[in-house]
Image 1 (cartoon, rainbow, N blue to C red):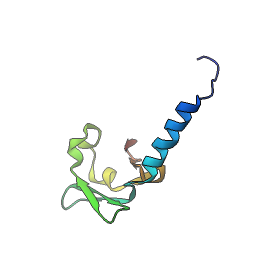
Image 2: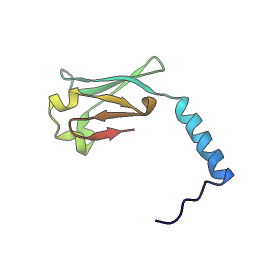
Image 3: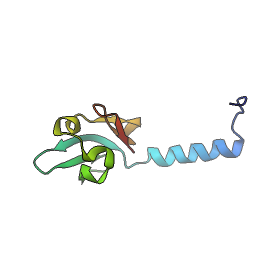
Image 4: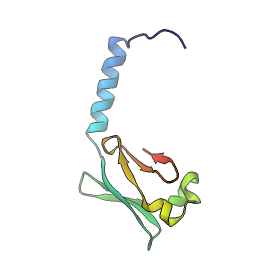
Length: 90
């Protein structure tokens, strides 16, 4: 690894713009596993929710209901994490 080089002004400005876009949302504010429907439900800060079948993600397809029930919100709402199986989605 080479020596640290601070970002250029252009790269720093791009990073600030990207951060502002992420902060504008939509962001996850809660998430749970709906075992009856077999779906992960993510409540967003925009007064709506999304639900998806965990089978569409290879790392979640073989997870048990107990593993899917424990969900954390990460990175101020830009990601969800399943700590029992060490899988994060953003």
